[in-house]
Image (cartoon, rainbow, N blue to C red; front, top):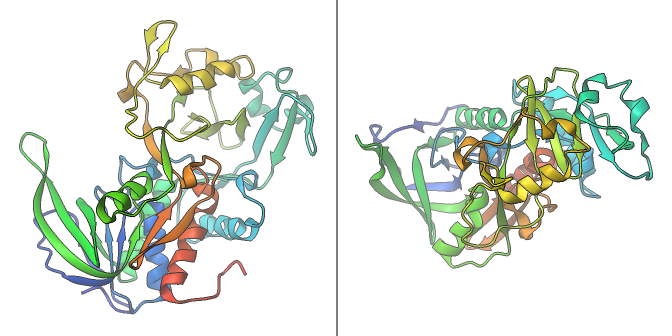
Length: 386
């Protein structure tokens, strides 16, 4: 039984731990940052509800989008009217979840043309000398600055939220593939054979009064395949090449042409723009650069080559583009409504099933949307952002 108020929940990490539960008030499927945050907020807002959090892998899943997400909070990504939610989220990331490597770090957005609020790039670099080696100020002579931007680790946020949810009484079932059923969920507990093949060890059916589908880019497909509910959402495969140009604690985040250079581990993570959804059935594959196979997909290569004059390090050996797809970290990213600029959202699918999607703007608004869904399920009208 899920832990009551003041009692911790239980964790089933492998099939050697017998699982015999048959009914919960709420089942949250997916333990990325959206699912774990929703589970934590639900336990805080409605501690009497019995809650099960299910994840196909570990916490966080090493193959999911959460662990590779950029982790850049910036007001430049906040849609009009959502400013209060974004500010609340920044406050939570700064101190509510323990150490998620939250670090205030200005973001420089660079432009080729003058515009409202933009300042000349060259004198701006006197404030940010660490950014000077990254760009050609003559190619990008204008910039605007988000002084309130910050970086953090989304994977650490998911781990912190998941741990806090268990301490608050949620049960956690890892290494389990969940399938939606009317009024519940089928749980396939996974194990690994001696030949390293992942197989289903046992299957359970659990009733749930409310189901939250927080499976990331796989969520809409799960709803369609398991429940026959059509959605308009999409997904895109995004890779994150490494740029081995030195960075430090004072290095700002740099963004140009939709591409973001995120300081990380002494270098940079390259975050390419997402232009559109990938078609159904698309299989990620590497591209070719001057006829040589590389690990970066063709669409991303075009973005990188287009910006090489403005961002000269991209044209050097400091950029790791790999020899095959396996050499470049990547993950499927959900696109709410099929749009790369759409904010995170939740929606009711009928039968007390809720779809929870993060997407490209989850770094700035994901936790607030997860809280909003938890409050709706718990019957709480007030929101902390007012």
